[in-house]
Image (tube, rainbow, N blue to C red; front, side, top):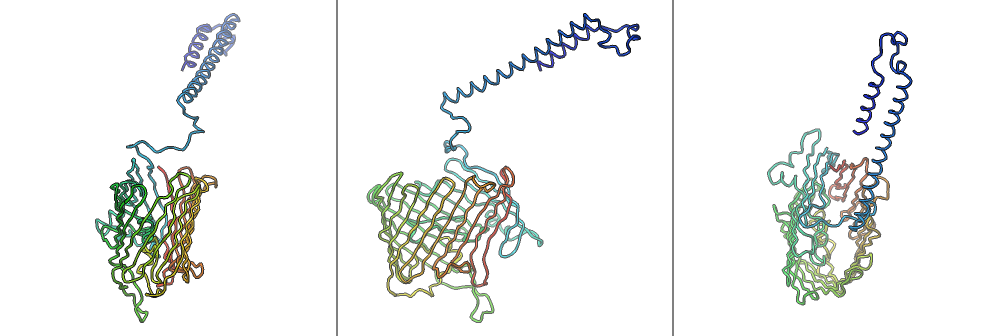
Length: 479
């Protein structure tokens, strides 16, 4: 603005000094302008123009000096307050109580395969976190050439479940923890009965109002799980008592599935028609004891023992069991003694896909077998984690699980990647096996704030002789 004013003043003085041109002078030089000005006047104009240029250079210098001074003052202020420069700032710490954290709004559009049919999908996802409270909403519309998938909106309960993913307060291990919605990693106690249970199994599109509720009253506490509050088919709970605070804890667990065949079909004896499978309600119960022998940030160790029994079937024992962390590793090891018709960790993330459990290969009253279970997690960096487990009993078949997760920015355009493989009772590693689950997720950045995300989860259905696969390929955007 100051430059413009100076130029206007200079222009005004120029025309005043130039003055009007007489008709006689015009005849001598039809161009007028500078050619009609006297030499003395031209010298004055040159001085004015030079003065204007000097003034502009002076203003430019003052502006640059001010900008440099502002930068220096800000740098000195950050240093005095202990704030590092922007390029050295550490990762963001947790927000103070009452402040939003981990919030984001996503939009998704893509193709999805449900029950062997292809649909288009439009979804709006929103996650909100404030202090210990968190909620996830996932409103999805799916349609194909036949129109909107109407069974997602048949009644108000289904409509709500089609817009809602979860709501949670606290974290597992807090004095109070509650979650309503999709459950993907529910564990009771040390996990001998229920470990990493999922109430949707391999179907990524199923919506259920499962619940987790844990309350620690100090000297005792409870842990509870239900698969769906609309239809409480499966319920589980653990009550524990701290006999010696911070040292000795005992607990009792029970899990009850009143209809393990719900929604499950098989072929009739002639192999011509599908019929509902029938099986009695299923109950498993047990007890445990634990002693936190070593506590520390670098190394810790919990020593524990477990006993569990399936009603009308066998029982199993764990002793000793060890769990904890060592440097960058977290570990778990169990020595087990099992009846021939007992399955440890029966309620897991494959249970909803495998139920009802077939006991055809288990001999009731047979000899006990000894075995072990080992699990090791390795966090190489903040952006890479590898974990795996191995389970084997004498005379039995082994079970394995492996997973690798990447969340870094070292691979160009790959925002995230994860892959996992699980198989129970392995004869050979085989994808065409009802006891096998394979899952993967890859995010590819196609523009700032926009990624193409591919997610798939697969099991094998021996009844139809084909894979049961849930797949998403969608655009994910951060608004």
